[in-house]
Image 1 (cartoon, rainbow over the protein chains, first blue to last red):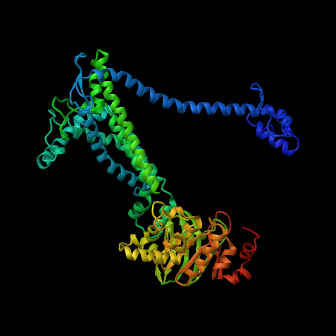
Image 2: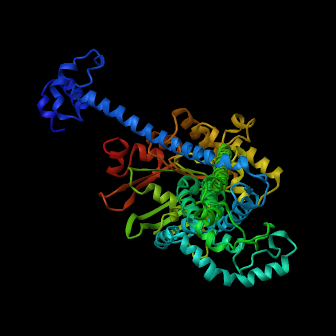
Image 3: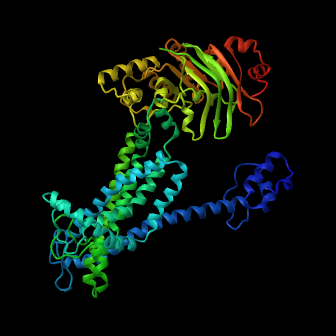
Length: 360
Length: 258
């Protein structure tokens, strides 16, 4: 605005000049010349140092910059997918077993590869879904407590605490899981196997090491995905429109009823997407599961007390020892399936959100 | 069904800040009382104290007595939830529950009270929507979301929702300020009808509206910025608008300030 007095001309022209020339203060005379006024001049030469032009050029530059950023992400994901495909296909072609249905994963001899992803898929899905089933109600409870019940003075530090949980390195979770949690869970596991062993989830498992099971791993994983579910859900609940809350209160709703008719309907899709993000994290979690899950030779039975390996933990365990491209390709193929699985989960989450949004 | 309200020396505080000072007034049953006054003068605060809605703000508290047919709604054994079931409220912006259908919006309060009988709910929905002059416009799409209606229809839906639980008193906080003149007229007609069954208190910035719909008018003002709001004058609407007792009232309604 320092250039305002310089213009000194008629208010209208002066105003326009200032507005158009604002980003570059040295352009006032140029603005004056051009303003009396038959619309914008036809595309000025590109090297003209005029304010309007340079701001338009800046506009264009910025547009390319953000478009580029967007395109970069798409290209990156495409490149990752392409890399996985190119590396995986030769190995899958020479696979002696059925890639999707075999439970073997024998890559010792590159001339005789026998591998399939069925067990990896089952263990990955079971441990992640188990973790999600544990974490979803707890996360919902914490989010409701923080937004609806906790006094503000408590809610803030408590919220930070939850976020700190997300910052704990997963190696720590892994060590804690196998060294501290697993022994504690042993009696629980024993009780479940003794009383509910008839149901496949609680049947005695094949894990030779006490506590090195899907059960322990799922609980650790639940703790690990709790922060992401909680903090996103909390943020969504906090944004419940005050008018909806007041509408419920004015009808004589109790605190729980306000939650039921105002907070939950508003936050439902956010809660679901938060949970799906948590599931995505669980599917890909590597090091904690590598530490906790016992390697086993027998096929996965579906029991929570089995050992085994997920996609990620299998790759992490074996990849360092690989010495040829074909064997490596087998693991990359497994990685590709994980990649697709994560994609599918996200797509599913979006579909769920879109549908619940349509009700609103 | 309608009950009277008496306020005796009511002070309202937000934490240590006193928002309203010493309001004493009576609201007879089956009448419309308008609260007018400049912004920040405490009229909405007083209105919200009548069904304890101000308590959603942490630290808000009321001193003095608010009597509903002689019973203090701030007595220690009184549950604010039951107060709000007796004294309904309509807000400045129409706020139907967005995920509920038109019908479910209307009967939301009854469902909270545990009424499950579909026939009863349908009857109440129709009666309330008729009472809110909305039935003919929505009877063919009761299962559409409440948010699909126009602003004026949404506000009448909110009124239907408030009267579905058959309150004794209906509080309205600037119910027309977000509406166009035609919808405003519809609501004002409705208020005149509702008076037969309910005691109505309405906060409005529109003085013509206060003059049109109310039986008595209360004028609130601040002594100075930062001071608590207080009741300057209350009386029959006709008298307050023609021959107000206080100079401040006259200045305000004649547009000399505010």
